[in-house]
Image 1 (spheres, helix red, strand yellow):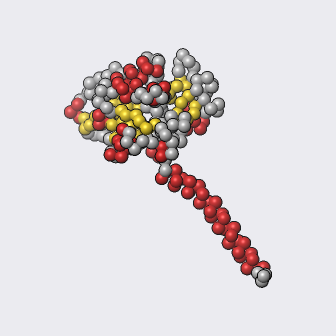
Image 2 (cartoon, rainbow, N blue to C red):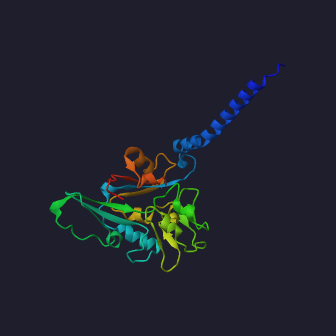
Image 3 (cartoon, helix red, strand yellow):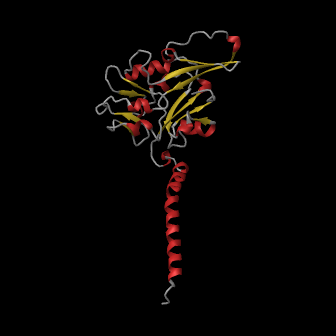
Length: 253
């Protein structure tokens, strides 16, 4: 067999190394493309998601009351797993946001209604992040994500460091004053496992809230996402929420 000149051998070797390096560099990109082309709920069954139709929310607060009752959440205003915010946008673009007692007790009358351009209600709860900051910062693994996509807290392991409360970009965590641990919306996981909907969904009189299996194309949440223009809160954070909204206004934070 003819031997290659040293110069040609070095050229071939360098070319092979460059090809291998390019393939290695492309691997993360290929993985990311596959992830977004094939989200987790295409591979795991069930995989829970949540939808909110802002246009249907009337701000009655029944969802907040039902959540506190179901999950034994303190009745004080600052301890909520879910709440409803009222947005009042005036004609001069002034924005007022209020949520007295999480919206559970209703809202005071709007002052100077003739100056209001629009007003609407926005339910808030755990965003069911696929890339959860709270999971990432927990030093003891007390906050974790289940195989079916729900972020939970194991109270036995929580040391009350509050790192997760600071990390959540949606403000959906609080420190339980009695249990002395972090607490948050669990999407009523104990009910989902028994084939029931969450307490807030069950209590909603207008159907503004929906919970269901994203892995089932025929589920309510899958059809809602397919048939409506939906958005997530703070999409730039890269948390990939599985909570989506229809009718999300640009003023909503």
